[in-house]
Image (cartoon, rainbow, N blue to C red; front, side, top):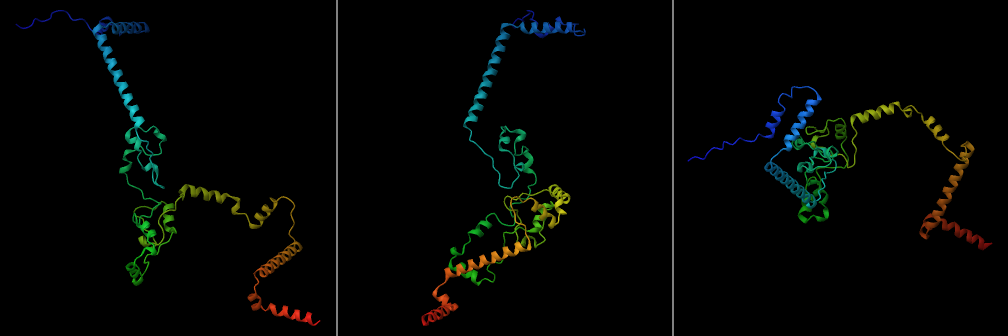
Length: 306
């Protein structure tokens, strides 16, 4: 036989009780009706069965335990993770490098971070490095510096001697002026060609370390400041006069007499220094070649005759 159906009436839910008790009150205006509805809803929410209260307590306990486990896991990972410091090569803009902590989702600096938080920055076009000459290979410069003549063997030495040009490519540490002009005017890029022979230019196409590149606006501001400066129209006489007024203390005015006396003292001092140097460096051979010994002997003979 099929089981008998439970014809017992079901208990109304809390939402049904609230709906029945507040029927017709929602259309009423005023704060009294709103307070009554809120009071009825709070009474219906608190009027739960023991089974419902037990289930709610178990659910809250599970959520609390899960939150505590997640917090412990994050704390353990924070304690045992290695200390990482992100570095970039000299001359590279940090905003062109993605923050490694942002990738992991734990960058705490936010907008103050000097690295980029744009994940698409790596897929953007790479800019040319102004502090590295792209014409040279990765290890070509190091090999050229290590290529010492003392390490050559006999075959290498014979090959260099018999070659038509020992060093066919002349290089220098000077920076190409066309390269600097292109960088300052914003024309330097992947498709830029040096007017001084292109890739065969003997000068370096890279900025020296520590070089601070000024923008076009900065150079225009400096030029405008110099144009307005009084130093541009200041003559040499005015400059000397202004510097003379800055001198303090007891000073000797320059007149033809004081200048002649100073010049005579200067020449006498130089002559005395030269005589002292010659007397210190005098040797028998030097005196013989100079002929001073003859005059000394004659004076000695004259004194003996007397």
